[in-house]
Image (cartoon, rainbow, N blue to C red):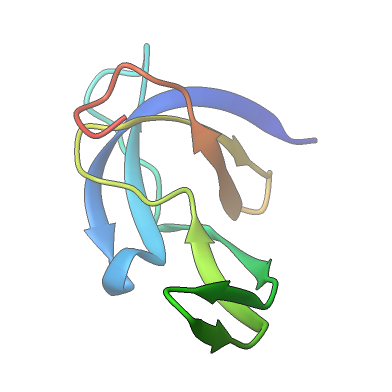
Length: 93
């Protein structure tokens, strides 16, 4: 069974691909490094300033996190988990 919680980011790892979170209401305990979602963004072709730009498909980490951000995350019984999204009220969001 999964448990969805809220907490605050205390550490950013692997260039933003993982974060350690201090769950609210659990004292100073922290999660193991949890992965940030990697999503595909499709940018259509466009013309700007007289130049043609081709369509692009890029991979981005979502959400982009900073220490102090509040997040929603899920923890599974096997100790794994996933960061779902920012919940507002943090330093960068």
